[in-house]
Image: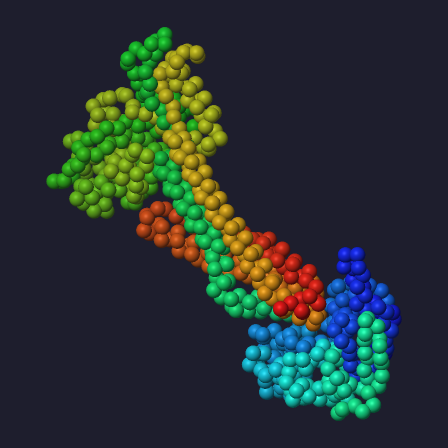
Amino acid sequence: MVIKTEDLSKHYILGVETVKALDGVDLEIATGEFVAVMGPSGSGKSTFMNLIGCLDTPTAGNYWLNGGQVSNLSEDELARVRNQEIGFVFQTFNLLPRATALHNVELPLIYAGVGVKERRERAEEKLSLVGLGDRMGHRPPELSGGQRQRVAVARALINEPALLLADEPTGNLDSTTGKDIMKVFVDLNAQGQTIVIVTHENDIAEYAERQVHLLDGLIDKDFRNEDREI
Amino acid sequence: MLIKEILWVALGAIRANLLRSFLTALGIIIGVSAVIAMVALGEGAQRRVEDQISRMGTNVLTIRAGQRMFGGVSTGDTEDLTVEDAEALRDQSPGLLTISPEISSRAQVAYLRWNSNNQIRGVWPEYFGMYNLELEHGAFFDQGHVQGRRRVAVLGHSVPETLGTPATILIGKTIQIRGQPFEVLGILTEKGEAGFNRPDEEVFVPTSTAQYRVFGGRNRLSSIFAQVASQDLMDRAFGEIDATLRREHRVRPGEAVDFSVRNSSDLIATFNETNETFALLLAGIAGISLIVGGIGIMNIMLVSVTERTREIGVRKALGATRGAILFQFLIEALVLCVMGGVIGVLAGVGGAMAISRFAEWNTAISPQSIVMALAFSAGIGLFFGLWPAQRAAKLNPIDALRYE
């Protein structure tokens, strides 16, 4: 089990009003699953993503990531979990513009305290895996959107995370490039990588083998994707 | 390896905004160079004063004859100081290191067809040591010459030139002082001005010779010089001189003395103090400009943190701890300040050199001021970088990632 949440909640207090962004979510995601988390804006899917990405802590409930309880860790412990257990892919890529593709991919290893030589080898391997073996010395502004997102995927995979967490990964890409990126995800999943994609696009969710729909901070629908697009 | 990444990022950030970084560091550059140049100026002035002191004699007291008072009324005549007084001081005042009587007057000095008018100083050999006078050629005269009233002379540095003869040739030759033949024993090194005296243009002869062979049997001394071992022993020395001369001159206790004693370096010391205050003031002003520079650093670091909010978010999402982020921005401020400090040191040293060359002021660049200025600028980097770095470290990763 990679993810197990129990009554996971996030309530914000705005003045006298309590906003229930997430109101008790119970969810289990097994190793090797490819899940799309869907829902309209305001459904709580961003909050949910922040919580399972260990960027935020819940106000109530429990969360086990890869078997470890993470819902009440300190900020530095959460940083270590993000570094070791989670690989993020963002809609806006979020690469460091002045650093080369190779350096961008190495970044999590630097915070993990890995030595220079090993860092380089592993970063080169991951860049080759996403088909950018010949672009390692390029900086993000010199790369196309699809290439940038591939760099981001390589970066997310660098620490062999238990969970690959993608937030609208095709949101800034044209549909052809978006499909290419989704193929990368499908391939990674086929090799056993657990993937959670947060999206509001049905086309994208079609690539996942399971869809979880959120509405008003609660799970609305949770079903297997029978006619999966591969 | 994290430190390497942090340094790399810091240098990259500085390079990415090169002009801005330079303008920010300019405050530190100006501050540091001002500190270095001001301290160098102060130090230079100080050394000049110390030079003066050493030329005027270190811890030398000057005893002069004063007017004899009778019942509170000056009788008009002055009591003489004699060689016997000097001998008594030498033999009876253990607190005085060395003693030299002095009798001086101007006289005509001639060698072959050249002649000039010079200050003739009749002294004991101890005088040379007292005033740090050194030989360039030949030898000093000694007590034997003094006792024998020998006609020997030691010349100031520029005397051979006025006598139209190279110093080396003049040694052992006979010159005329007020018509009397004198053998040249030695030539002194160049000293420059010492107070009101110009030792370079003077001719030194034994006191006894001056008294009996040059100035015609005059017993009166111009003054007696007494060197004291250290500044701390000055009071004791004053007391001993007072006691010995009262005995010699038969001045009863309570009666006013007929001589005066003054410390030649007192004036210089006062001057020195003024000088120090001035140097401190200048360094203080320069220090303030360093602090202003530091505020500039803080301002730009805050801008930098805001600009790079998203980058901070990404780094945090990828596993950077608070400490790593704090460290990163702290190092950036530190690198900026230390680079400014290094440039400032170079500018300050160059400025001090330019001042001493073009304004012909004495400067002395002290290594301590360089180390201090660098340490101070690093300290400013840490102090003024801390708050912006803390702001960066405390950023919430979610908000930081969403920041546009």
